[in-house]
Length: 202
Image (cartoon, rainbow, N blue to C red):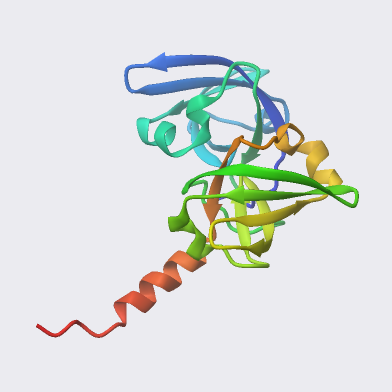
């Protein structure tokens, strides 16, 4: 479980293809301060397991489902990635509860100046739009963010200057794909309501 508050931006240094997936080597600093083998680290919002580490880098393995579901399968050497360690039981939740289970990717449609920040428009799979509501939570590349507005096939996010400066938002351009995780509460409510519907007559 994560809070969606990015701790640092790391850099992918090695991408190794394996028969069962891909291994990423990521250069970092902050998240390595207390990392152990088997720990979970969110990489652009995807919860991945540390399988090796040293003083400056760590390795995570991506299963085929992770490659299919996220934008990490198309990453390149030198790409910057948002990093966050898993929450501790006594830590603050500065964002919202983020599982690190990416639901899919959304295309960045537009980036427009908005005061000192930027208003970004995203186009996710239409099947996910029912979970996206104005002023609701959403995680984008592991960042806990508030939805500004929505349409049938899009939603907008306002990025303040601070967020752009300390995350990979500084690299966002129209056409790029971003990992998204919708608020899990919406999924639970939908399933609970569905279970209360009367059974269809035979």
